[in-house]
Length: 364
Image (tube, rainbow, N blue to C red; front, side, top):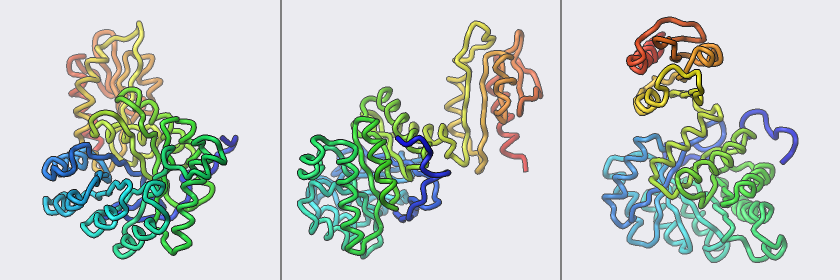
């Protein structure tokens, strides 16, 4: 990695539109997930898509394993679900062209297993007719043989060069509605490959650690990899891949954006790790508070909320929070911007904090 930051703020890119979602340019970083239902079960797939959208997923990717499944996009639209839909294609380029004709808002292809550039160009032609973007998704299993021979392994350089070859080929053919991703299960490889791509093209970049593992391990790997790139200004849309419920991918993605300061609204929750000075049931308060906070509509405001165990951490160390609570010897204090504004019984701490959050939301 270079010693200096590559960009001040977000890396400048072209923008593409997938349905109602703009990716790249000045658009906010978006969060994606993928259904894990049997796509041929249209009802179950539509229901999961709706659930993901309601949880804050900006675009939902759906595997299209055969021609029976291309109708899923029309089915979901007929069900009144409006979230942008991405067709995930492997091997058969005709599944991509038919998915576009049936209403997919974006197509993800792995060019290395499509069977040649002519088939990639056929996908691009179908996408161009409807102004549908293509994500060029390269991973270690699809790198061109010549590049594997050149680099000796699916290195970051091999991944990046592979993806860029396909990007440049599409651009030479006049197709520019491109998002690109270079994924690996190795965090350092993914980060370095994405950095190389970011330097050498203007496409929006999709970032994430593939095959990251179970909820706990996978969340950590993605937080490290995605977070590292976002802090460099690289990344326009993200997916936290987990061997778990897709809803957890959305939640983790939102938390990563929060941690990187890329959420313009909603609630950021901070809390102390507890120690021998803790005066309240911090874990109990947090377990009650967190699900309630997730349901609050902040009306476009960004609110930082602190839950601290004692007066040392709050309101002093948590002065940067908009509102918070801290444990006292006999009660809990409520503070705003570091100033104590009231005291409540410890058992009432969560309710009092929610009331004060709502006061902030309703202030002009």
